[in-house]
Image 1 (spheres, one colour):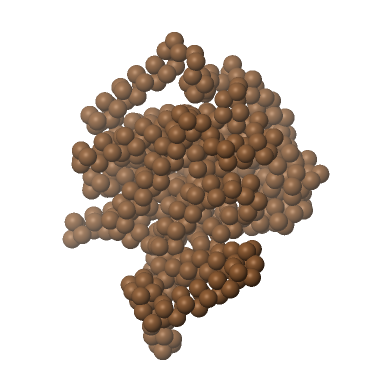
Image 2 (cartoon, rainbow, N blue to C red):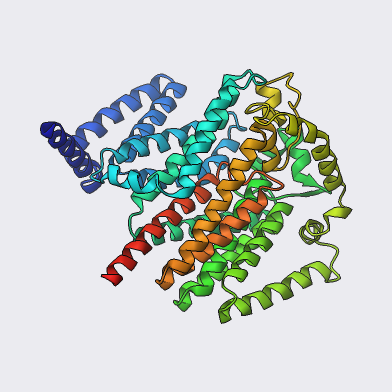
Length: 496
């Protein structure tokens, strides 16, 4: 046993020395690069497709090796990949399954944890005692049992949903173990800020200068996509993401998070930077024309204000935010499509689409009550048409993530999901009041605003499971769990 551990440590040290420390500037590296260069040159000269395939395979090998050597590096590679995947996919008109690449990186990074020197047994013991994690595990088992739901007949459809459940769970575990101190958590927050700022700024670029030719070709390649993006002759902006809804949801969450962090930031330069960046995110969100994002922004700000209303900075923020809200709602400006979309968010009773959604919800209520375990995974909307054609709910537009869960996993699954969201919010609020470190309290308050905004968005859209948002929501969830542990350790040291 001891010899195996020694061999494992020597292999890990070898990989770190050759690939990370010396960066292939050694004999092993020269041999690897020479062989790859010859193979790639030959393949490219022989056949262009074969050459590009070999090149992609080489890049993939290096990426997966990096994930095995350092799960933290693998996580960041995945973050960068996910934020650029939709842009890359547009060049191939969405014919390349880039999501599989992200799944492979997540899985390899998870395996890499076992090659690291971390005490995973002890970490897992702490991790699986966290109340939201316990309930998430129960939901995972429950959805696994949905494979045997007699109303659904597609294994592939079930598997597509399980990928969106298991993969994020691994992300939370990776973050919980890789970000083991406050410094690493701050690095991720800074990187997330830069990526969100780039996305928001590019959304502004699309609004001010128009879509590029490649983007227009992508929009017009699908009639349904063109119809959803082109509203009243104006294109909704999608930045580097897969669509305006995904863009608006991510920008809303990031705007809430970084504005709330800036309120407690002591470094004036950093405070100004966060506020300036959040303005671009806010503008990008408004140009997306996503009304759910408007509600998320408002809800996140309200719950944060309720938590920290005793602070002067919060009261000033509430006053300014309220004045901006009144201006946006009642200013005599009627030429801005983004502003009109914002106003319609808070006057939904007058909106035709809202009336249609309410009619649809009443129509499916008998089905929900009579099927406590739902109709099976991937049985509604477009996924239902693809994987479970002929199902009573196939093609039904759920819109709301909560309604989707009620139809597919039943009211039992909906109760479990709502309980999970409640436990997450309770966990963050409790951690906020128990923490004494000002930095921890600031992060917990911002996380509360972010999570509440996300759960509010679930009422009209799918926000938690959106592809790119997977690497915003779930890493922040893992950070919340790790922050609680770090805060408890600090309190323990202080008391001793």
